Picture 1 (cartoon, rainbow, N blue to C red):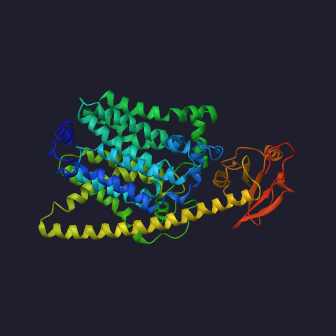
Picture 2 (cartoon, one colour):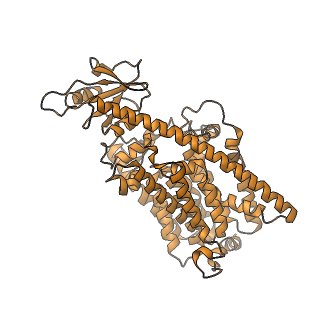
Picture 3 (cartoon, rainbow, N blue to C red):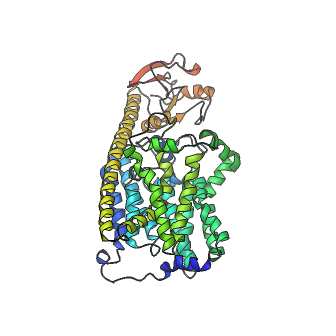
Length: 507
């Protein structure tokens, strides 16, 4: 076992530059990961469009630090990592395009640094292909410039595995250890539970493999996870009654964690459904999810290639981490969102790229040409499908966000201006994003986002303008009977509270 691990990791110590020319002309291909990361950023800016507006979850995270609106209710499953991530821009600017550009640049830099953590474990061109495969998925491009956590868990997981392997191979270098600790902290800051699932094989490996029985590895990994999750743990005790209670509430909000076969739900979501809950309806065309079915086959080929080349571990560990990261979202929840599997896609990308490199180089000349042609055609079709799905998803999201903005503008015309409160009553009209767009507080008397009572909301209405969103057929709640019903935009109506009494802020 020790001999195999020496063979698996010797490439890290034997890495030697092939030439010393400018970075863009080096024959070892070190520039390619940087070019892939730059292309990833550019594609986000061109295809996702900075003016798309903020989504529902984004408004929750951004509102925690934005001057645009009061902080929205923060439910148990959420974490503060995204709010920290956007703070350098959102804390002083309400410009969504500026925030999108900032996140696109930051995610491009994050992809480059994550790929750099793998330098020496695989050829630079394989790393570049792996990065390109991951970055070209519509779901990666769609969430790159968004204030959401999943992509950052993915980049943290990719960097953490690379740093773990390099630190285990060379005990004299401290940089990989610091990279491991930082990457683990990033994952845990964004989503502590996802971080634990993704790191599970790394936590087990020091027990199973003698070469990795290094206290410093576990210290860096566990220390990073603890540091990143510290705020979440403190908030669990301050606001939710403890870690177990917070996890329990989070499970309830997610429909109850347990055995749920969600593989078919994930397939349905690949057609461009950002949230598939409930996940019903027909499957998308097979061309949309064909890549998803091919992915495990190519991963298996990559593992076989690595075993034959006696460098098993650098391929096996990311595949193991990808598997554990995907398990809760494939088999433990009863709904799906394509972003949930971003960590698994990032981790499997490099072994898949290694398999593709082998397919176009290893066979004899006639078969090599055939394999190259088939792969070129397959990748071209794959990219075309990804672009089509991305375009439709961006169009739908942009239209939805513009609807919320129009509803907020209609509230302003009706005199509902900050300070104000926006609530809803038993309808599908979302109060949180509309309240954010209007600069108001959001309120709910029931459901997962309940943060007040009917009596308190009625009392608030005597001092502050309150709008209860509904539809044409929606009835007024008991506290809003007698309030004025107005049509805002499309199917959205609102019951508006009477003007506040004299001397109180009003509309």
